[in-house]
Image 1 (cartoon, rainbow, N blue to C red):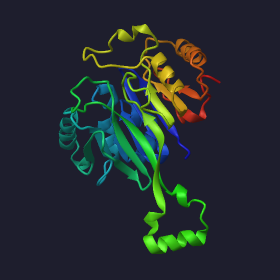
Image 2: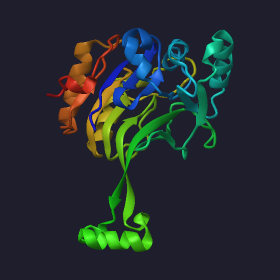
Image 3: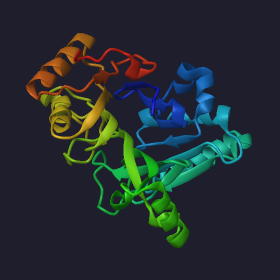
Length: 292
């Protein structure tokens, strides 16, 4: 499936990514509607990773422009109290947006955005909480297809039709899910296998090196270092990598050099793209990878 991904991601200031063909927005940082203009009207589902303000302050304007009965559907970590408060405020501030759906989600939930596309929330480690409390998540965007069961794949068409007539079509097929897009949200790398078998992985890389111990805010939430992301990717199957959420302390040259050096160090040969601080990038995957 062709994917047109446009985004902006600068630590502390704003993060959002539009998956245009799917009508999906990942996070909703400030300035997204001003950057997308009419394309923002394609957004039917918004998946928020956590309640840091740089990931949600674009919601009010997006909702004010796009609200209609049943849409958009705004999904957020189920135990984050910021979102019910925001829902109540927005409905009072803009009464016409009452058709918007606000949906608390967590691991184990399935949010179907199309007949063959389902989004799965994945717990991450940005916010330190008890295991049963969900305040920060990533998301997997899965394409779902029905395929003939392997043991029946070699049968003639006539034989398959006979089985369907006798036992029903469901007896001949199996569901196959493909992870089209993985979105990490803000999080350190803890589970090296979490994003294995992902088509496009969008992962934060706030810090380049050991200064990752410095916190961005007093909340002491956790972030990734570029090197741990690259090491993880070297051990799993990912087709394309998009890196964002870099701290604005770094120059473009420093970020690009660090990415190239780490691609060499960990033998990462897949296309690696990045969103530099302060820049909106349209159709990210059509650009030139940093490591080419």
